[in-house]
Length: 339
Image (tube, rainbow, N blue to C red; front, side, top):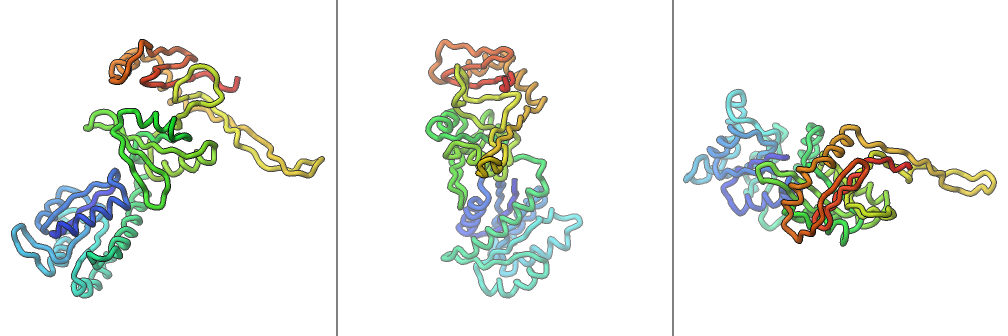
């Protein structure tokens, strides 16, 4: 999560800055606060630690006062003098002024501090590109410092859109579309549970079946949303019998492993498979087992369903399927698939 303070008395300009931030970062990763004068900005910085300060140069000192020509520069000098006991200094500072003479006057001072001062033009997007590039760098450095943290609780990938992804989006997750510039994938972001302690979920469709497409989408989901858990749900093509939408096996096989070799008799290239078993983590296996055996949880899921309810009871057992069709289909298999 990136925390940004925008100190600017021009509401329209501040709104465009917010749009720029959301387009480069995404609203789900952004915490925004605004101040229309330097006094309010100082108060915000006294109570919050910001990753980025976007500062107007021509800005009022206090409320109801006229903008001060060198207000931004005065504020930065004050921050440096009070760094020991004053407000929390932001990690990054970007000055944004619509007056070219102010940019020219204070460019050297910003350069000395390794800050950035950008000329804002209402009829141009050049300032947004420069601000966006700086934001991208801040985000990358921010994530590299906090790789142990997670932004989402769960990421779900599917191969089919009309059947598999549609079933996921039918769940009451308050879903919204998240489009990323330069990426054709349509990401869906949802939240479950109470708003005070939501479970954040991201979902997307690979568009085609197969391990390469699934791998590429999985890497994008991990890099962009940094989930605690990554899951793939589908219709389990080729598996006979009744089953749910989510399969959890205690051992899976990667049949895509292997290498190209030369067949000695024919001297032709052929693929030599080397299936690799991938066991489930023991802690996850234990949690899945407890989930499958929790009768109170199954009753809570069924009683909480608000759609068409059929007289089908959730059932479970060792090595059996946990079924809840049509309102919820979760399958937990704890038997080895190698047999």
